[in-house]
Image 1 (cartoon, helix red, strand yellow):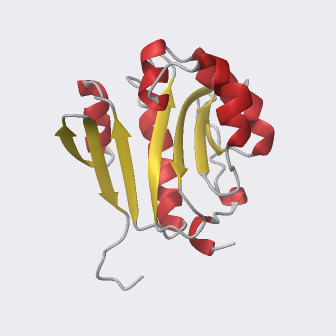
Image 2 (cartoon, rainbow, N blue to C red):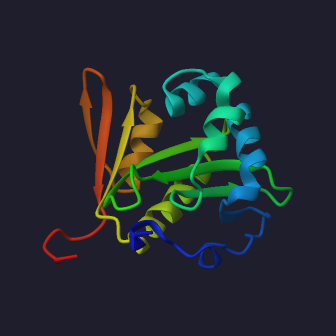
Length: 176
């Protein structure tokens, strides 16, 4: 396997904050929690994440097929394990030097910056994995989501089909 997407999971756990919320890198044993999170999303957030409301296929389809060894899936979770927000860095192949960022947050959590914290950790891990570029695509993120993406460093372009954003993770002149 290429080192491009290999990030040691042991380095990804962040101690719980004073309110019991923690940031964690998800692994295969977290699939049920991730599916529960997706199913708890509002219909709009679910459509923003998956392009359509696909509640019936989430657990057996999407979550079951995730490559949690290749992809970086970061969650902001409560002490009881409930996932508040996620950020996923998904590469098309193990050798790719770019990846797509997808993110979710339970209702109210985008406003509380839970999603921003999860994205920040995912971006840091993508840099650690030596990725050069992150992209984000959406059907037309609302102004709050566009502001979030701007705060974390994405350059956004609004076009007829939605919004596309890019974030360079390393200097293109550094030779790496």
